[in-house]
Image (tube, rainbow, N blue to C red; front, side):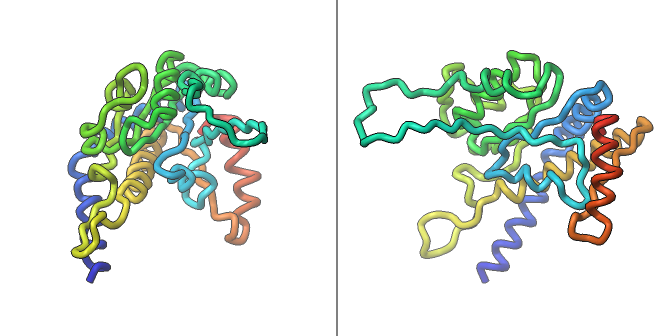
Length: 243
């Protein structure tokens, strides 16, 4: 059955992550704990179709991850016109985004691009590094090493960030061949990225507890007493201590 083949392939994906990413996961956890201990903030930007949201405001999750999302709303309704002769490249927008945010040098910013070359993501990470921000990238090395860079730096994420976490997704993302269907089935990076992020978080918790800083964890808002606990205990604790 396709179901059995899929579940077997997911098991293989997680085993590959466990076998190849342990040191990077430990290093990411220590970097985050060091940053928190020094008074810095930890920001998660868009990772693999917003999988980072699995870490925010979830029962069992910490409060020290902060959302780093942005949008530019431009209203200029008019008749359709050919704009192919104009340079509409947005490279450099990352600098504005960072300067408009609360991020500071030595904070940690997670970014994600499965291919490692998504221009807006590379641009944000590139500008962050110039500002002295520590950047952790979630990418697929097997994918990134098969494509060319599109940023003017000539770089892909893994070539300049502080730390790369390989989600072990295959090139072109999908991980299971099904006879009779041309394209492969089932994206790997979402499952893998969530698994890695929670693994990193486990390391952060242990690091902080070993240093005498035990973070409070959120309770489910839909469980009796959860919202009150979060609002009276967890969030005030984070605002006071940063963890």
